Length: 254
Ligand code: PGA
Image (cartoon, rainbow, N blue to C red; front, top):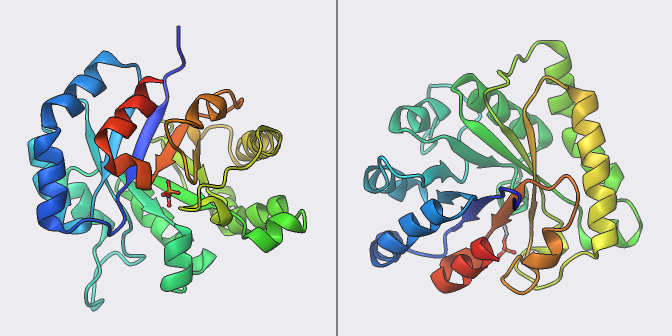
């Protein structure tokens, strides 16, 4: 039987509210059919404002909804922020954190991202933790050093007092920055090295955590067949290609 992959879509801020709702409405039956006729799981991560309408629209279907970020704080005077608790109350089961665009644009540090990780796990939302190296770091052969560094604070937290139920999948998305939105994909050799390292590393951090490993960065219908061959890969974080429904459908079905 084919392996069951998870497809998490990151719509970023590419569509406005009307466009997000229209995209879902015009492909609604096809989305549901895709999630029913395939072994793969589909999670849509729209902008904050579309989360609640999408949760209502996909109630009692296999499609799940996630957020693209959350506050590192639980509650308080933090104007404009969205707490994990509210996401949980809406029925949101997944949340992307540490995306390279947020690390860059919003100057998020590994400390901030660790706080978000703690918030999410405490409200039983699966974190989708993005990690990845820049082109310069990749070219200098530093990818694993960068990933180690990005995982360090969360590792320390899990080793000290953070308890995560095995029933809560925790996603690590390897997204080389140089691959995001560029059409450039790492070689299979590089991906095999990274995912075998990540698999061993996550087991070392905690073998009682339900880790899931994702690849993200320019995934499309052409290159996905090859990437699916990589050992220890559980799914994909898809940006641009997830907003073309026919392309996305081919990716899920390939
Ligand atoms: P991309 O984006 O698929 O458009 O490269 C992936 C991401 O940023 O998560």
